[in-house]
Amino acid sequence: MFKTMKVLSISVCAALMLQACHDDDDYVATIDAPKQVLDINPSIYARLRASSPAANNLFALAGTVAGTGAAVGDEPCQVKLHRMSYDTVGGAGEATTSTGVVMVPHGANAACNGPRPVVLYAHGTTADRDYDLSKIIADDTNSANNEGAVLLAMYASQGYIVVAPNYAGYTDDSALSYHPYLDKVQQSTEMYDALMHFRTHADNIGASASSKLFVSGLSEGGNVALATHEALEARGVSVTASMPISGPYAMLDFLDTMVVGGYLNAGATLFSPMYLTAAQKREGIYAAPSEVYSATYAENAENSLPRPGGFVAAVTNGILPERALFNIASIPTPVSPAPAFNAVNTAGYGNPYLLSDAFRNAYIADFAANGSTPQNSVRKALKNDDLRTSWRPTSPVFMCGSASDLTVYYSNSIKMAAHLDSALVTNLELGDATTGTPAAIQAQWNGALQAGTISPTDIHGQTGPFCSAIALGLFGSM
Image 1 (tube, rainbow, N blue to C red):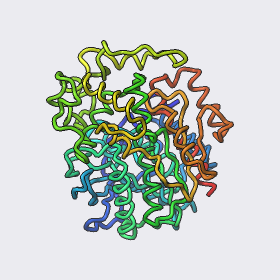
Image 2 (image 1 turned 90 degrees about the vertical axis):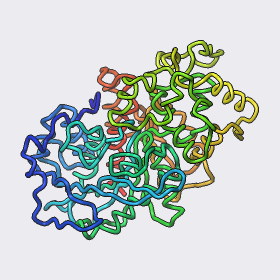
Image 3 (image 1 turned 30 degrees about the vertical axis):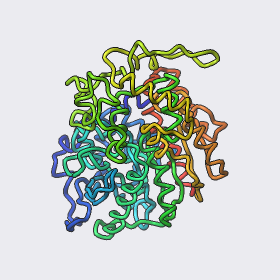
């Protein structure tokens, strides 16, 4: 189920004639308000669900969890998609702009009209600068299609207003030349800015929001969702509940595990330059890129991502290595009782490699000398972005993920939950009903793993739809 999450495999608007997606006699363009780009009606749902088994399964799961029906045609709400552009800040506090989507449900069903709850959603890591949640369905080459389909199926079609930024540094309409990746201050500020932009223009787009506000996100977005929950409460904005999914919350410990312990994760050569550039823009972690990157990649790695074509384009053009983060000659041998390296860990070592031996040696030396009070510039940046702060939530936090995740290790969720140490925090593990995961979701998840329809390297991304299905049930009960 959802093996590759390619749930939008055709351009539905092209198949139905483009004007059918844009016609709306009630829409009136308003300066600065989000602009309607699509109205998803029953015929579009039918075409979408017929486009792939994964798409149909996604909507069926949403309807089953919500109790609205799993069959084609059971979707309670039509949905108007709006593209928003708004002012925000970059990692150094510089003024910039960003874009995103607002999904507004409508229709005769009681779940689709009147004041509707809002889901403020943060998307997962992407290296593609053209990622645009407002272009789902209309553009079948859009890298946001899959996560956008989850938002549509799990939330908007079920009666939730969705507000979801593309993030600063994405799409040609953002003025920022980089993305402030995992910068908790910038990204939580941007989430707030997107929410305020929606609230300012809600009446102009016919959106009536209730007092219920939910925050969620996957991977990078899981980190952003939890940071946003904290930031909103600090600003006096009431949060009904949050569902951070598979996020890197314990940033310092997570990177220590990889750099010092050598347990490299899937995607390390994508994540590393994005984070290092964000930290450099914010706090100047090096005087020259050659301080962190190997000679092979030092010239171009800093400005490598995001880019049109994403990580594949960077690898194809020789700007980044596909897997090798560290020198093959530096691969350590774990000392028992530490677990042996798996295939993903060992794939992170090679030649040529992305990060220099000098960088890694300095990082390891700082870990040995300073532990959790780092002096090394990169470890200090990670400490700044670590979400284990003095904050304690005043509304429920439902963290969700998989203990088998090879991309963002589940230890992040364990350590974050232990740090928060609150009765308001629930740590849901998808394969374990004793953690609070609904038995039906656990059975589907475990069944997909056992059948091989979710491969080990797919697990991280696949937590998104399954955890969102849990969120749909939880949010609906609040």
